[in-house]
Length: 310
Image (cartoon, rainbow, N blue to C red):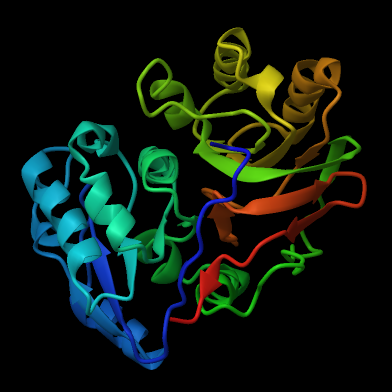
């Protein structure tokens, strides 16, 4: 399946409606601020009922969180779905997802961190592009640097298509761990979550992909353990290239040394330092889309359109 590009989704139309769901952890939301933020950009915000719920470390029960997700995809008035935050609990929904419903109603779906579980499942079983990108509370309402917002809406509105280079701010230097060029589907997200769903029907299908990884609050020995887990499972030997996002809290020199040890024997291109994940700015990446990674030139190029005009 990974040799085939994921299907594009309808572009976010001007003056459309964006649904906010909370499929993972809870968070306090300034409703007035959120609505004003969306209106100032030309969008209506539809806040799903579960956003107001709290069930310990979860944003509502599994039933509530699943219902909100299904409702947002099924509603023809909803043009895109943004997640409130990450945290915990998203994998609990995977074996209850209605992939037929999702496949019949593709639309931009945005989130990261714990939301990685949904990215992997949707791409594998519904087959359309999703977006590893900013969430409403911490990122968009958190006043992160301008590329956070512009990167997101450039992709969702269709300003970037096949042949476009995904721009990266020059203020944040990239590091070529291993040079080379590879083409494949961009797939991945939070490294801890990728490892957590190994051995399930939702594990990453790594054949020929450009693997994207990021993480937060994991010491270097844990990152080593997670990468070793993927290597021993045979996943790293299948990938065509690696794009490493932000690994927050880890010394960059130590991380680059670990990446060299892990990937140099595989002879694949590896580019590190991409500002995506738990960082500021937090750039959006199209998960499931066909891309070309040029680690030597430090570029990522879209090889397909990720949205289309209905």
